[in-house]
Structures are given as C-alpha cells and as structure tokens.
Image (cartoon, rainbow, N blue to C red; front, side):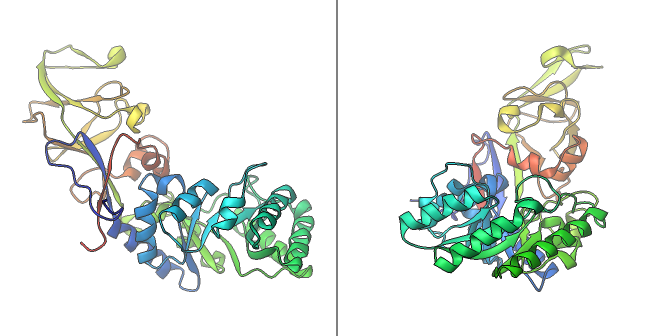
Length: 389
C-alpha cells in the first residue's frame, strides 16, 4: 500500500489534471511562523482537508516543521487523523448539539466548548468512555460567531471548574478568534484582547487556570506579537498564502505556496474571426485565432466568476480565460502562438515560473486565497513532493 507521504506522480502527458502539493513548503511555512512567534507553540490547522491540500500528508509536514498542535473544525476530521495514526495533540472546535462525542473523547481529541450545553455533552461522553475530556473554553471577544458571550462566560467557566474538580474535565485552554486581524493595527484587535484578558481573569477568579491561552490566527501570528500568548493557530499561512493583501505578499512574509494546480490542453483548433466562445458567447474572437480547450471547470473548483478574468500560464505566457467557465472546462484564446493539445497549463502555483499564485486569483476575483485552494474538487488528484526531496 502506498504511504500517504509517498509521491503519487502522474505520467507526463497522460494526467488530465493534478493539484501538486509540496510538503517541504508546508514544513518551511510552519518553521517561518514559529520564528515569527518564538514564545508560543504553533498549531497547524488542517480543517477542510488541510485547506484542500490533503489532511494526513499536511499533518506530517506540519509536525516535521515543529508544530506542537494540530487543529480541525469538526470531530470527524480529528478522528480521520487519529485513524491515520497521528497521535499529536489535536483540537476540534466546531461541535453541534446532540453530536456523539464519545469517539473523539476516547481518541484523546481536545474539544472546543462554547456553551453549557456543549460542556454537558462533553462531560456525558467522558463519563461513558471512563476518562476525562480535555476542553478549550471559547469566549466570544467580538467576532460574534462561536464562543460564549461575556454575559454567559462566568456560568460556563464555573461549570467547567466544578467538572474539573470532579476529575471528569481537564481545562486545557481558553481561546477566542479575531474578527479583523488581517487588517494590521485595526482597533478591534486590541478591543478583543481587552475582552480576552478580562475573560481569563474572570476564569481565574473561579479557579480556572488553563494550560494554554490562544487567540492568534495566521494574520495575528505575523503582525501582532502581543497577541501570541501560548499558542498561535496557523491556518492559511501554513499553506503558503497570505491572510490578506494588507498583511503582505506571501513571498515578502517568507511563505512558499504549497499547491500547484496544473492540467493539459485537451484540444487546440483554429476558428475564424467573430466566433462566439463558450456559453452565452460572452467572448468573441476579433480575428482568426487558435482556441485551446482546458479540461477543468467549476466542478473542479475553478470559479465561474473567473469568466473573462482568470489568468493561467501556457507556453510561458499568461493568458486570460476566454468566455464562460463551464462545469468541466474553459477556453483560452492563444491567438497565433504555438499551443497544442497536451501542453501543460498552470492555473496557479508558487509563481516561480511566472504562473499566477492562488493569491493572484483571489485578488482578481475579489475573494480570498482560502477559497481558491479549498474549493479544488475531489476529482482532481493530489500528488505530493515528499519531505525528503
């Protein structure tokens, strides 16, 4: 059986497409983030199949880079990592009412807890399993998403303290999440930190002194050292993408994009001037030209909004998508250039060969790099450059 870390390399000229992931880049990025936060531990965030990169290989790469923790959204994601033999400290923070938590508790997965109801579910699972449950209590400091409100915080920490005294709960962390850390210096950052510190003090007043305090995401890890506390949660930066243009370009931050999305020209053909291209004829040729058919579409994660906007690299030249992005394909107008079926097409990558980066795509489409990489679909195989190359 092939190890998750062994390269699965397609034969040149035969692969329809692939998302090639450089595991060494992930390792490098974790090291870069660790250097940016030398007083804190690093959590490599692996939710959404490691932002589309493949959770198990990315986990090994993050741990090789020095990550002390791994993080996911859902308990099912955590259990998949445990089933793959990953034993590192692991936090799952998005729980739903009525969810059976016995398996993650039995697997030693830490749980993010933001309400009394979720705490009771975790305690019930711990009693069923016969071991304590490690929890990270979440305070909503201003994102207004997950976490206990300030008004409900004292009740949550008091209940957790009582369960800890009974030996059924271990309070491993207190945590929160920034709303606007991707705008360095935004006033909301320090306002949230004030609420966070007050919540920590309030917890201490009822005897809760967790192992870890954490609030910093990738953006705060790179730009807000006063927010590092004991642990930084490295999300998008783990994969070599910038949290936002305001934080800086990936290369300037010392990050290496880990994923390269590539395919091959499926068909090249000459068409006359005035030819309408793709659905709706949203592009029309202004001269006799060569059209190249590219076998990736919105079912593979190429945004339909890239119609007449997105750029790819073919034959050393960046070329804009011509016409509507379809479910399985899109078209390029390559004019009179020597482009033929089978030629390699780079949609995005590290940018070292002149190809766009995922951040370039995000800027062009008025979105974020997170969306570009996580939406690459399952029918595009992931292939890997192992850590030892």
